[in-house]
Amino acid sequence: MFKKILNLIFLVIIIWFVVSIVKPYWDKYWLGQDVEAAAIYGTKNSVRDTRTFLTQKMKEAGCDFTGEDFRITKDENNNVTISLTYYDEIRVFGVTLKELEFTLKKTISEVKATF
Image 1 (tube, rainbow, N blue to C red):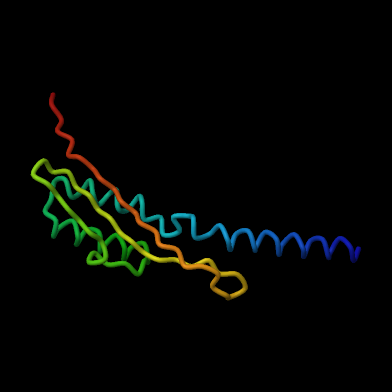
Image 2 (cartoon, rainbow, N blue to C red):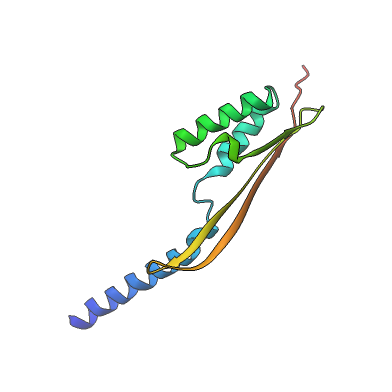
């Protein structure tokens, strides 16, 4: 009985350790979907409106990012590129092992439908 409990505790510690290390490699804020939606919105709207839309999306998602944290560019063909660089840490037992830089970039082209 004691051995089973000890094995279970050991297994939980291993799972927790693996999740702690792998976590920074996830898109933990699920930003990709929101940024893509903002880029699609931006193909039909101004950069300022796109930034406002992105700020609203970040508030809804509960993220600390604002529209000003994103770099938004739009060319004459209505190709919109939105990028964000942010930092995250690998932490184990409350100790920071490494700080990582992540860059998220989405580029969307305007789709013109013809019937």
